[in-house]
Every structure is written in structure tokens, then in C-alpha cells.
Image (cartoon, rainbow, N blue to C red; front, side):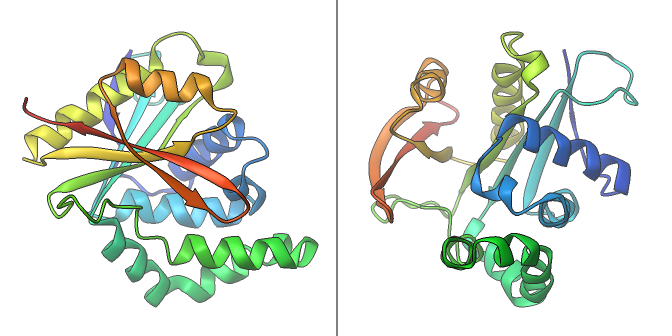
Length: 210
């Protein structure tokens, strides 16, 4: 398994990562916003110095299509505020087709996404931590250890950059396999967050350098 940091935001690189996201998260809200919205989001992930974007390939050939991607963000509140300020209108128009199909739900969730701050723990200093924003694995590569290798790569990069810990959120209910995955890889349950629509999210933390 070849794990490399991705930095190129060219159209081909973005397209592969968007296709991975769509395949890994069918039916999820971000996926429902469509390829244009996701393309713009991943282009910003790849081009921002605040983000570490790792891709996994089954081959040493760097031209091979990735089978997994993981993104962590330093200071996500500042990152997403910057996106809202400079590109909020573009994100809105990218999401417009989905908005027209289901305006009530999309407006509410899109506003929440654009004002997202990373669900940091108010009781814990996250100024020197990174948020694991997304980890996507191709359905064809499930069970091959791709997710674990991506986590290891992300943790290595974060530790080399002297971050204290990684944190993330994931659905509490109907999501047993994902929750078990993080627990098995050394992430500790920090809190359960209540979201709108009677949705509950587990927040996990993994300390680095211990």
C-alpha cells in the first residue's frame, strides 16, 4: 500500500478524490450536494496549507487511481471561516441544483456546513490539534487495511508537525463499524454531541507522542 501526500489541485486529481467520496458516502448530505460542490471543496483541501491530504494507492505507480483519501485540517474554524468569506457565493451556486430539489433541508444543512467550526471541545485546547475531516475508502478496497494505513499516515504527518492530538466526529447511531474502527486504532471517546434532527455524534480524540 502506497500512502502519499497529495498537493496537486489539478482537475484529474480532484475528480478522482470526488469520485472516491461519492462511492464511499452514498446518500450522505455532502454527496447529495453534487460533484461540483465536492470538487470545489476538495480543490480547497488540496491547495490549502492548513490541510494535510493523503491518498492511498494499491500500486507504487503515482499515476494509479487512489483507493482511499484522508484529510486533516489545522484550526478548522479559521479554515472554514475563510472559505465562507472568500468563496461562500461559489459554494452556494455549486449547491444550487440540490437546493432547488429540496430547499428546506439543504438550506439548513448547507448553512451548518459553511459555518462549521470542527466541533472542538471547549474544555480542551485544540489550538495545536488537527481535525480529521474525512476519510474515504473505495468500496472495492474495503477490508484491505486502507483506512488503517491512512490513519497511520495522518498520525505520522501530524506528529512530525508537532501537533498534540487528532480529533474527529462520526455518527453515534447506526454506525457501529466506523466507531469500532476508531476505537481499535487508539481513539478515545471524548463526548457525545447532540445535533439537530435528533442526531448524535461521537467525538473521538487520539493524543500524539505518548
